[in-house]
Image 1 (cartoon, rainbow, N blue to C red):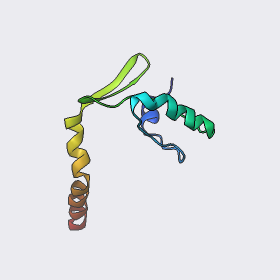
Image 2: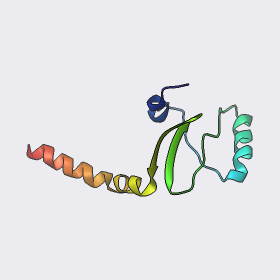
Image 3: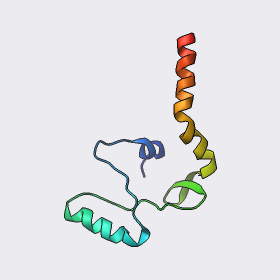
Image 4: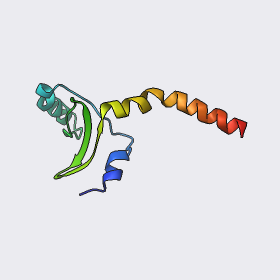
Length: 88
């Protein structure tokens, strides 16, 4: 079992995240295999919450509404911080 924070935030240069409709997961995995690309299904999308878990253990759950504000305002927040740093 890997360390949860490393699993969530590790960035390998060749790792990408893709979404495909549920009924095309097997086809996408097969296609990746044809090109010798390691691929695995790691979850699903939909619903009103983001749930991250490891087998048998929920790591955290956040509502999409909680995640929306930071996502949509990150540039504005960065601008405010940079202005505060310049003023200091």
